[in-house]
Image (cartoon, rainbow, N blue to C red; front, side, top):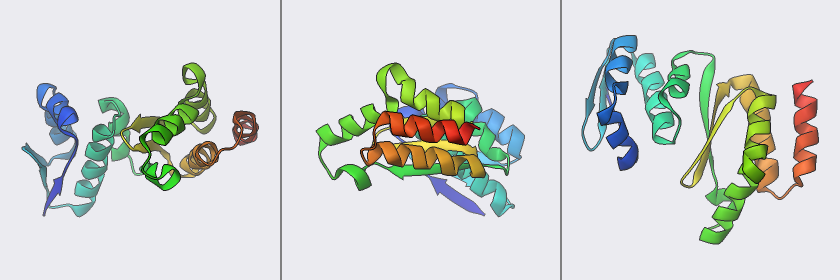
Length: 163
């Protein structure tokens, strides 16, 4: 079975320079070819699905080690499209990114710590990697911020989650 994956050009260049491809092939016993698109070959469709998620996560700004967590069946990648919250305004998109990141990264860090997830804000998306039961809470906190909830309200929600 063969699958094609597209990731942003700048992330593809990073992938070509590093040992990411070789390690991924070694761990998963698959064949990966880098071109304009990334081609994945394997007999196991579940491996292809997992590798596709790893490559999407890497393409969305996660580092190699964090993206590799997706090879574990307990971890998933959740992608939130910010255009669903902002329309097409570039200024509104920047404002929403700032709300999720918070002052000096405080909001993003609090969400990650309280929900035991990793968050990447890249382009027009916010991506979350974590165990499926924890991602639900991280997504809710992020959506609260994107919908305009006060940061203190979100912090209280996260405190309940942490308990």
